[in-house]
Length: 448
Length: 181
Image (cartoon, rainbow over all chains, first blue to last red; front, side):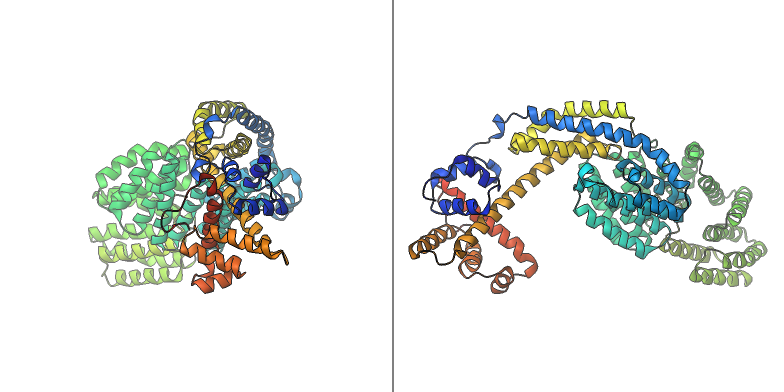
């Protein structure tokens, strides 16, 4: 190209819109050090990127850009509103079908391929996680199927990838609650891969990091869990998201408590609760308060624990979760015992123990029995201790207790028979059970 | 943020877009985004906000942050494509079978003049690429880079080359040893 290229051609060159042959001609021309053409080309690059001599942004008129973008957003609002109002009925219809049919429906029916329906499924999966993890997994798997079938032409490929990542994250979390750690690891890996192909929305990323930190906590990989939480905290601060920050701090507090750093756990939980909006997520708020009361009591701050328990009582009732209320009673019994109100404590703990046995909750029954054993030990009531220990093993053998935990309880029973149980031994067996439960992902009062 | 009904969502979003417009405009101006491309950036950010409305607690700061990030990505992509176009063009020019001797000499001379303005590292890398026709793996081996990082290093050198190619427009002369790449 001997003569100078047309300025429009140079502009297209800078925008990489030219065919290969044209590109070749222009590069050849520029290699020959044509100052004029370089200056024209540079006008199409910003100052910060080595372009024009002065910022061009000042003379740009963005009026039309804003107007057109808004028109498209408005148009999408209408279709999203239609989707949203149809989604609950679709979910009701789906849940009325047997599981196999549910899967077939979400795969084959185009009616189910909507963003709002997928979000609703994932919300439902989250809710089920508290009550029935197996069901939560099924729902999350349906969510994954729907997300994989969303039309990128309608929602945008990157946004679809974000939602698919969210679905895998919810599935991974449900698998964690059910102690399927290997499956959960796989799901989080898929979630992270999809996030990389998504919009790079930091909030979406933080939600996945938060759930993954919970998995790492259950796997006793605390250093990794805390690193993930640090990243979540940083994102929450950058995005000015107090709720996300609160959730991350509450999770950090819970993990610190599990790792026996009670002072740091209490500090983190307090900071987290301060940021949480109880209306937005009342369950999380109660779980956070519960752990704070528990760790206060464990660290000997019983008066404060009791005060906080009283002020939180209405919240437990508001949420209305039966297990939550039972745990509240259990906490009351523990604090009463620590405060030396033995008769009251014994009555409460016995009542709660009976309910836990009826609900088939082996780990919880074991832990509560050890609280009761501690109470007897402090009063020197060895006959009751022996009776309690003798009652424990037959119950646990038939329930959700791991072999190692049964062995620990067996040791405890032997010590009780020999009247050699000390508070130290009770604490040791109890903390062993807590750890083995945490590793098995069965800690049911952890924030989710 | 609780799920909003349709009219409420429309109103909240409307208000938000109105109140954040001056800040958004400032971001677009600072990044010198051409208006025709600004529309895509704004639309994409607004649609993501619409779909994720229930999950985003601070919509205004989220929107501003997202548009900023998209502006950075916009230029990164533009710069990347431009560098790729320059690279492909040079490789094509060098690959033309049997060009007249004088043309070939002139091309080599012009290319060397631009390369001479780059750092030693970039000059060596691009000479292997253009002069000897080495592929990325061979370049990595020759220069002692890991294969996994050669793409990144090459991209940096291509960016430096593209800058130098266009820098003639400013008549900038290199001061000492160029540090590009």
